[in-house]
Length: 262
Image 1 (cartoon, rainbow, N blue to C red):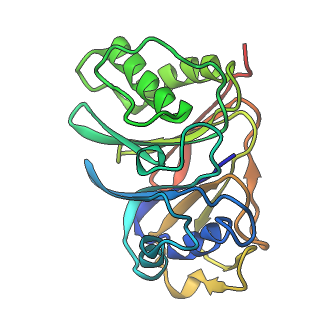
Image 2: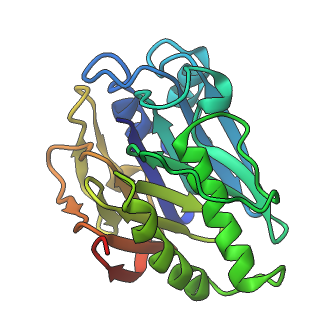
């Protein structure tokens, strides 16, 4: 299956350190080499980079590793294909517009025989279970709220209800953002941590690289990192419980809920 990386921040922050380690899993320390993508929000819109090459080989990934793009919400994905060909249209994250904002979604897992009816407002471009799930989630939000944008808490409540229903079809771990906050859900594997003042050193698991965050941050900075597997040796990562949903805003979790498969 695939691997996810998300970041939610109090102030615009670059993800180069985490992405350097994460991208090693696309063919060096693991075999998630069937494409990659990453999205950086700037308010309502985002910069989206996707490639059907692996994050080890892609020159686009080299740009991300070496050029610090600062953002408050970032979602990245490295793919190990289970459904759908290795093509650009099947590369995560996926993007759609809703309520005048761009939405970004990336999924880790495998959904079997998941073919829900869709309204036509959101239509898959590729042929992955992941993109169908994204379109279905957005359909359910429109069904619940119409075209008046609800609060983050109201969105959370709908996602909390719908996500376990989708998870009945298989493994469903995801990160979702509209640029205001980052929603995350796990049935099997996701981990998270918050880096905040006073900052410390961090050493990557997948690459012999260390950074002293106290030298490159301010007391106002705070960063939540969400990933399939921990990225560093010497930090305290918290594993999601099966069926747990967490909403991150301003670099910290602001709402949690847990509901197992029904």
